[in-house]
Length: 104
Image 1: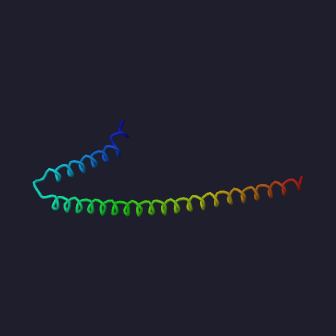
Image 2 (image 1 turned 180 degrees about the horizontal axis):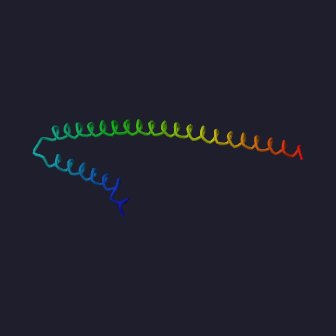
Image 3 (image 1 turned 90 degrees about the vertical axis):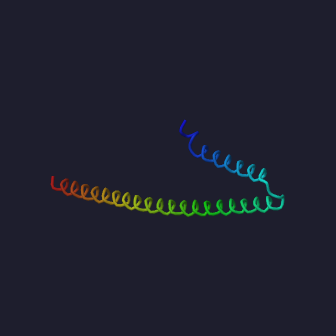
């Protein structure tokens, strides 16, 4: 239920806000040319807003991707170290076992 009221609710709200603004402008007591100028101005503002938000989203996504790469690299290094420690422990244990077996 919360998923329905999340991002979709915000988008519907913004769409309603935009439609309301357009209807308000269309019924304003102004000449057609003034109304067209206002509509073009608002459309340009909306386009600039969307471009700005898209740029911010792209920047955020790039930051998340970079952080993901850093975490992946750190985890890879930790796993590599753990595997090497396990191999070394195995080598030491088998070397000890061989040494003990030869003395028997």
